[in-house]
Amino acid sequence: MKSVCVIGLGYIGLPTASMLASNGYNVCGVDITPQIVDTINRGEIHIEEPGLKELVKSVVDSGNLRAYLEPQESDVYIIAVPTPVKSDKKACLDYVEAAAKSIINILKSGDLVILESTSPPETTKDFLIPILEKTGLKIGEELFVSYCPEKVLPGKIIYELVNNKRIIGGINEKSAQLAKEVYSSFVQGEMYLTDTVTAEMVKIMENTYRDVNIALANELAKISYKLGINAWDVINLANLHPRVNLHNPGPGVGGHCISVDPWFIVEKNPVLAQLIGQARNTNDSMPEFTYDLVLEQVKDIPNAKITLLGLTYKPDIDDIRESPSIEIAEMINNNPDLNLSIYDSHVKNFSHKLSNLEEALQDSDCILLAVNHSEFDSIDPAEVSKLVRNKIIIDTRNSLNRQAWEEAGFKYVLLGQSSENIVLANTFANV
Ligand code: SAJ
Image 1: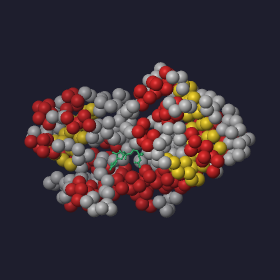
Image 2 (image 1 turned 90 degrees about the vertical axis):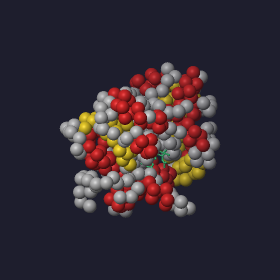
Image 3 (image 1 turned 180 degrees about the vertical axis):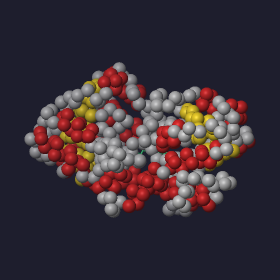
Image 4 (image 1 turned 60 degrees about the horizontal axis):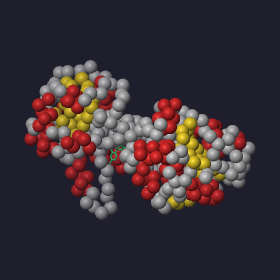
């Protein structure tokens, strides 16, 4: 049986390791966090993802997956570590570097190294390969190297790992073929072979495409607010056109992918990537726009209590990385005239106290729905109206039943639709 070592047991590494382990590979999973290693070796998981718990339990029980703190000698190495963006908006490749260095002494002739982490174009050839060359093995002849980006959507990872089409970028043809062989153990989607730089760029452009489109929707939301129209109506009507697919505005773009990856293009081409950089800035301005909406609604209420519903970066997951909700929570919290309560049943720990729903709504002056978790669909506005002090609800996702909230006496405010008097001091200060 061939062996695979997966370095980084996060949202991508752990499902990938488990999938390989349930499809005939002997898999060693590696993570630097002892609690993660212990949790997995007990057959349990440290992240929320539908179907993952059962999968991990079965492969740990069968003995095909075992987690370690250090890489173990294997035939294939998959690097799936984070590549965050630094404060100067440049990629941090420290984890990739550490992962590559950690296998130098165990790599042998015939091995394959696959980088899965989203990385700036040319990372594989200009950053990873120079580290791997220290093995003394001839790259492309004795040691094979590929870049194979993941494309899975958090919340649907298990399904998409199997069914998505995959891009396999090899440092040469043989490297790409070997990587394809590994993935074909569980991938049913078509696989396309290319070079590493193209594969790196494809991955980043997918997320950049989405980021730029969301920025367009967010710009529309602000303009609609100024014009006194409803951006969501504009979107629905424009999308009747057969070649138009406007995205949704919202309180900002979160997660470790879409809000990060476009910067990797800007980093490489700051002069050429004008639109991409501007889209990032537009999306990054949305938490403040949302905060402005709150300020406008409570300007006449002294010591207003704001109830923030949802902390994660999108619905029905537990991931709070880069979440715009956190930024909004900080702005509210830093305002001495406002009180903040937060409810999110998916999140266990946060720097601010997390309340239960009733506690969060008690004596509230303004409810801010930042994330459309499906559980919020079943909140009864009539029941909420008995708890709150002032009946104001701001829906940043166009996901609530407006009529039901208005019938319960609430003032319903929709992000992207102007209410009577435009104040929004920060957003429209120079407009
Ligand atoms: N968002 C909007 N408006 C929209 C769509 C999304 O404001 O119309 C916001 C969401 O609220 C969220 C953020 O964008 O804060 C990102 O959410 P998402 O569901 O669009 O994407 P991610 O970050 O969870 O996953 C993306 C996916 N990429 C694409 O759809 C092109 C996924 O397939 C990738 O594998 C993943 O990035 C990744 O790991 O790169």
